[in-house]
Length: 215
Image (cartoon, rainbow, N blue to C red; front, side):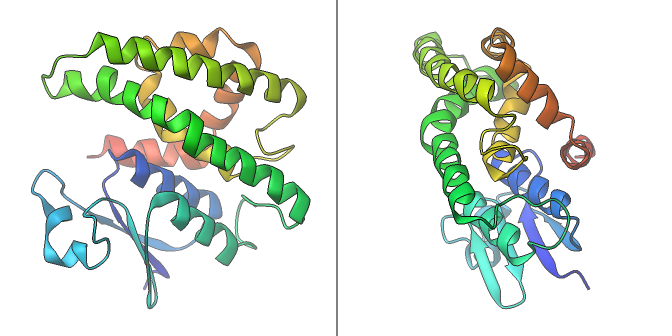
């Protein structure tokens, strides 16, 4: 029996974020597919795991967690000796990594997620893209990526010399954005472009994309 259960849908950026961590840690797990089109995430069983009715959710024995970044912090700490070391044991190095984890969540993701919704998801649903929202958030994302370019000129990864959760948390939105016009914002910044090429080629991430392609 698998040590942990990950409940989610591989099309969800939040679920992809957790799956990438589980694959990086190389830990035994069971992926429980949640059919969001059928509304499974709003039914009583799933709401007992996440009262907000959003994927993913994680079960590890008696422990039940939701919110993808919180799940990833737990997995990285609890299974620290397994697979890729996604956090630092040194408190000062981890403090720097934590800063960039917050940057991803508070600065990068709001703009990136809105752009992904407008340019990648809406067209799939037959909805019209709001060009004003796109322009506003392209400008916001460009400013964030300017900061990234400066940081990555000094450090191979955002959190330091090693790949950590600070980098991994970007992968799902990058996946959707790179199929849109927003790709140019990354390509035009050489250090950002090299960083993206590095982290998106990781075997664990390719496993997430393989799982997604099966759905």
